[in-house]
Image (cartoon, rainbow, N blue to C red; front, side):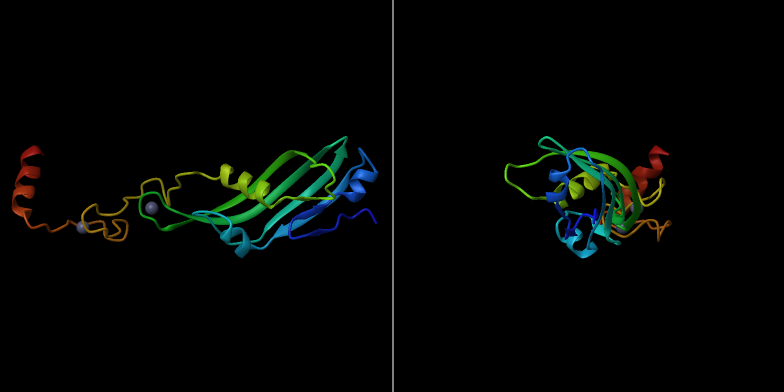
Length: 162
Ligand SMILES: [Zn+2]
Ligand SMILES: [Zn+2]
């Protein structure tokens, strides 16, 4: 009876409104593909799950949640995908728009996850990145030296400064 009805992260708050201050369990999830399509530069490998409790006080919805998902972002140097597990607790305070009986959590939850992520992830601390000339991955080709047209001058200059 007290379970909240949630479809696609739409939180139905009718029951909450009828019982101000009473805590109700929340258990919603968002499909990984949908989350990916709504985010920039972030690929969701697992569905976003949001579990916790919620209650209404006057015109505010309080949501104590544990958010879990797994995402992938490009490494800032070599662009290889970097996997990151997201496991965060957060308390949301949402003003309920007048006359609304449900709250859309998607943009809030996704916005929160995006903000919690490392904005410039590295695949490993010593990632060598890409060759600035030809773009080859220097992690996979550590001995790579780029051949340029005026190669000889460059080599001589480099040797000179050693
Ligand atoms: Zn990298
Ligand atoms: Zn190169």
